Image (cartoon, rainbow, N blue to C red; front, side):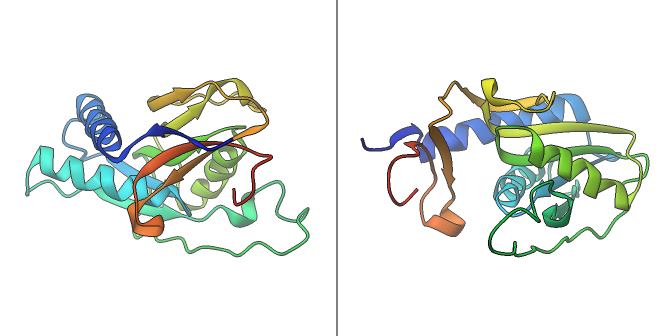
Length: 185
């Protein structure tokens, strides 16, 4: 069975535009709000959201944005046969009393978001934390985590996988739904 395309590049642009406008509605000029992309794949969405927000709000608006590595906060990092490769955290500001928007590409079990919240606390205690997700696999949670901003909700089977492809890493923007029995997933 071939993978199904859930979102093509044009639809992705529209979704990012919509999510950006929703953020502006709730965060106004972003003076007390920051974007925090979860490494590795949430940073692509974070960069695009940030660029869109700066286009919407104008050149005088500078939105603080960072990249958060969660490798050693994961509950499974010691359970793998091969060691996990850590990414880098790039956060040149304190999140104390800020409104943090955590950003990732796919919300599945919720365990990545739990790890991100643990990692985030090393940089201060935020006033508020919201979650922005491109794809929400709604019926697969292991933890009670829900997104504030959702690009698309997908009802998928446990035997399926959602893969977000970004032009920055895979040369093309699209979201695919695979069966886990397929090769090259």
